[in-house]
Length: 220
Ligand SMILES: NC(=O)c1ccc[n+]([C@@H]2O[C@H](COP(=O)([O-])OP(=O)(O)OC[C@H]3O[C@@H](n4cnc5c(N)ncnc54)[C@H](OP(=O)(O)O)[C@@H]3O)[C@@H](O)[C@H]2O)c1
Image (cartoon, rainbow, N blue to C red; front, side, top):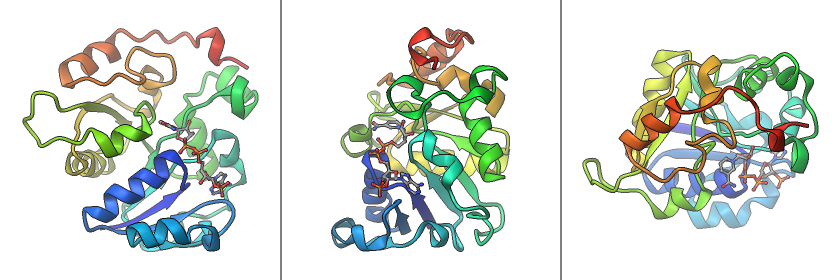
């Protein structure tokens, strides 16, 4: 599959590694330009590109950057993507440590991913946001393994969600359907499922136990 990854840090870098190793055609971009991604490209075989080029022809696009950088993404970044592209949003809002206060999230009560959708003008699938970057490399297991981790996946576009769940299965993880984007507060930072390294049953239970109230440590 042709996959574009915007963000080449902890998560973007490790998704580039694993998805390239699985044989996908991966393009990867960061804020500083493709000339700064030669090492990752040599290691993985992925193609370093500009942000504008990352989604071109892609069936899956991953947006994995600090939330505060989302508004500065160039308009129309998804215009050249393949029809039916699934856009994965791995991002988390860290108002105090990194992103600053975002009124639409805190005052309007938008989920972090709904806010991102508004900026990029395309529906997203929320996945990997509570997964330690290192687990993407260290914890893939074959389907059926009793120790296989499960990741929550939320999104409104059922076809895109199915595509993302199949890709995560290929990466070595089970998935749990966490509902639509308006339900995705259940997997935001500081919820029971955030950072949980467990299987389907425990992830399902943790999602059900989440509180809609934003914790003080994640308010700006
Ligand atoms: N680290 C984790 O374990 C983890 C786990 C789950 C979710 N997350 C979330 O996933 C997102 C990415 O996390 P991370 O730890 O991978 O971040 P990171 O290591 O800080 O990397 C951020 C990446 O985003 C790029 N970037 C920043 N602004 C950009 C822009 N305007 N256009 C294109 N690329 C831009 C950076 O490029 P430059 O270096 O060129 O600036 C860098 O490659 C965050 O929202 C984070 O909260 C992280």
